[in-house]
Length: 180
Length: 235
Image (cartoon, rainbow over all chains, first blue to last red; front, side, top):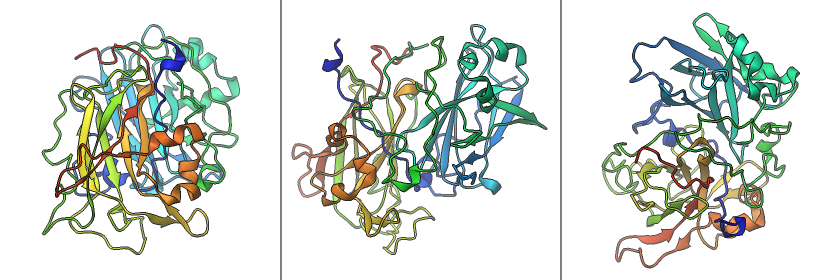
């Protein structure tokens, strides 16, 4: 099919500041049932769970309090999806409970991140890799497609009971975002 | 696993990250070029919703939050088809909806616009496309509301849509507008979309679905990114 015969994509528009009662209602205390939340381990049995927490910073290094984060992961064994807004935790953290994905086809394990917020007309894509997967991270094709000085922005650091993954929209630590 | 799609955002119709007239983009748009990951993907497919159980009134925003009466405003019924770029219908696509009430007020705590809340209207709902990719929901026409982007700034009437196609690239959040809105000319969010894409965000009045003595009909067709012919492997 020629490109000219394709239908035009519906343009994206911002999620805006008022998504909470529509997309994350229970998290924010609205009287409407959420179909998804930040616990991605429901229905997962026998796998060790991890937490992933982080902050989304704007270009002035101020934590963003109205972002919505989605995590998507799939490794052949598990296909998991979670969603959380940054407006309810102290410090505007996001936090997820999930399991660490397996390596697939020799790639370093990772989780897809989709980020939405007021001030983004198009959502952003990034990835969470894991600091304790050094061997696979070193040989990973996608990580190796990123300049060395920016690779660390994609690698979640270990903390007490899980991982920390901060997202910087701009600045010297600007997170690598992908074009998918 | 579904095949990955190779279709990028079409920047002839998609808005940019940075659009300075919409001031919030200035500190929130990525400043570095996006990286194209090497293709070795198998981990791109999204949640599947064929078995998903919608609430009985999820698709009817005029009824799903009623406390002691009907919501105030002009009843509308909105329908359309969700397809991929090849025009193939996308069945069992979840659509999440949220909007202001008829007075232009959102239920969200952050919205301090001095317009009344409607005790019988929350302004959120969900629906799913059927086997032919068609969807339909009922609501109240949302009002325009002021915002702080520039002096005397008002958003055109709109309904927020969130959609999941078969894979991560087809994820879309957008806004549906109503025909002939005089605020289009002044709205930097709408105008961030290149001229070629703007009409794609405007619903059409549709008399064929207008329900006599009940609700005005609007049609809003949606095209999700992605060209794969079999986006859902499990159907």
